[in-house]
Length: 530
Image 1 (cartoon, one colour):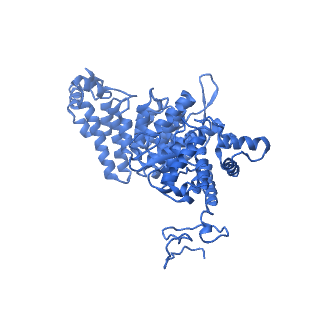
Image 2 (image 1 turned 60 degrees about the vertical axis):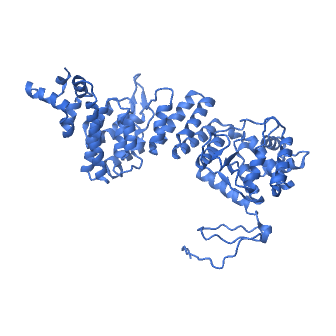
Image 3 (image 1 turned 180 degrees about the vertical axis):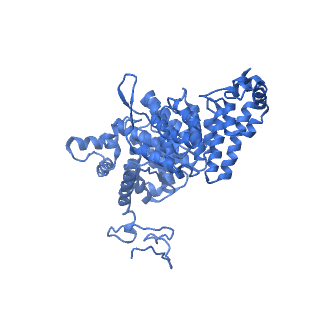
């Protein structure tokens, strides 16, 4: 008892109308006893399954999408239960069975005909091509599904076609993963008022009836009466809840949609979400969403999404809201940051203690920003562990810089992100040299994948050399080498870090020869500027 056992199924019968055997490919089973047996029991588990899924989705905060491939009449009830939740539904339109029937019914245009006319036209088509779904019982279910889809602005049901590799509402060439992700995000980002039909919505009628007298809605048409009752019994119908109009609820759903697009590494879908945010909620909300997306992408190490966010904006991107402190607390690819006791002590202290108050220009005490905390903690660790220049650079900055993101990426072993941030640094030569030095120190500290880190140390030094070699004249190269940031020039920094390959570059040797011939010991490299 209490132990897992492997059970071999033998003499397994074939599935039939009277039942189906347990599938040995599953580890757990939830068996529902409805009191019925044989073919009469088919479908009696659907409502419990839907309620269980709704409970799990709500508790875990995870998305759910229903994928419909082929299927029989019983599939229609499963789809309808998902629609009442509502959960996004992706229908493989050309897979036959219930999927093709749903596709045929929902594809009838809403623009030019009334709902009754649409219903009659769709059922006539089903009677010809899908007779199993043309009876009165299926007609009621298809009509309810169509009305629920209308009430969600047509964003509840997505039609995917295998032959064209396309699905309704999106550009050609989309794959199944895109279909599933967009089905989730477009429903999350819609509002109850989106694209409603001219007729009173089914969901709105149900809500109004309950709010007026507490009773279920009624109608002169039998199928509408049954639809209202079924909606009234669906407690998870979030579209009938007034908190759906709550701006905070909508903001939370948009944030979840952004996180999902980032996690799936889909900058194209993320851009559509952000653009919708800009159009519906204004520039300030777009900026907030853009900042959240950037922090998500950094935390999840998604260079493709980060590049898109930095390049797609119509305005200069500010890094002022990037939280470097949180990034250093994330899991890194090399495991190096997690293996540094001094850093972990700093992180625990910084993330658990209340931020220190700082005196503002007006003399008032203001709460410290994350970047101030970063400078007081992580930057000091960087300065003491690798080079004091790292702390000095942080002290001179009022907000996060691309160089600081580059150093974090190097320490995390994310070379694609490191290259991305390096290309945007204000002083790429200095930044590459510091990055190379960091790599060498990590190797000395016994980092995992030491050969790979050593290889990148060499590459970073070569990148710095490449900038010097790209100078059109010796004077231009000398100006780069003489550039100071703080107290040391680039050439002084190379001498301090003993970057031998960099120092053997002809441009470096020319400046050092002048130092020796003039008796100057360096200490600034300014003599090479002329």
